[in-house]
Image (cartoon, rainbow, N blue to C red; front, side, top):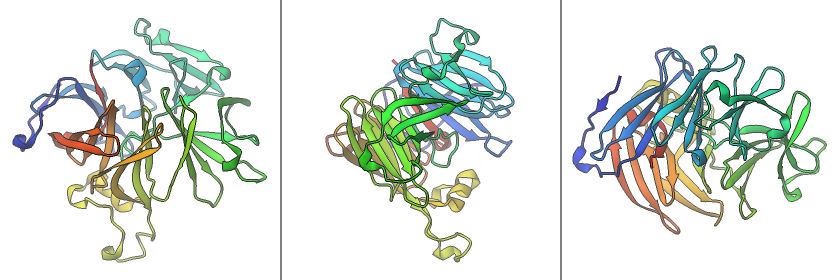
Length: 377
């Protein structure tokens, strides 16, 4: 059922051109990690219109990948009601939907084949072709490990891990080559870690990969009992940079930009100090109980209330100071950046060395659960 949400404080809202759509991931009455997903449109007067339910309460959203180059989103619901659906950005509708084989638990995109894949059973990888002319079931086919040339996962959506996509776990061989294994078959992903970032150890480090098809690849190197290191590659130019991890709570890629959520590991156990002496993430007055407040109060992370936007091409960083732990970037399109601070949605402009001209687009309780966005053409 479609709903129209009337927003408060309309006098302070800025109008926005037609074509901004939001995807929510909200807690459900089932609790746990069950997430309901819905598609909303931002109207020119700041109202939000509910268009379609993408994942119901009793299904739960398991994964959602924004495939910007194909102007589509691919989502999968939770086991046992495992359903695949493809959302088209320009028609704002589900163009494919079908049940998929049982036992599927994770996926990542593949470039340049434009497939999204997930392990199934013992080492079987199935691909989903996003071509609109193919039916959902016709889009599924088994891939060989060699076709899994480069997994694509654009990173963590949502601050409190609602519907969050994690980085793809991988290994590194003795020559620094990034690899994955499927049923005993090793697949090299086409990228190597330079020797200067590796240590002379008997066992190579573990790692996790974040990448999109257009511009950026991030790789987290983790040696036991040592702080992790994050390397950022601008794929068109081959420019490589290392970003500090002292104030890092999450990564997410948008084109050539990598958004770093500011935060650090809590310095003390929350159970060992009086409440007044515990580290608290900023913005608690807006959490209003529920899952968000429970997460921020109990998380091992303390969020800094800042979003750092790293340009992998120029190796420069711009920062949005939100003063709110519950904040995230949901879209970067050209020089426009869209971000959420609690229940408020903003648009700003990426200038040469700063983020400027921020304006409020909408305010609603719905926006607390917005984690993805796209523009329709």
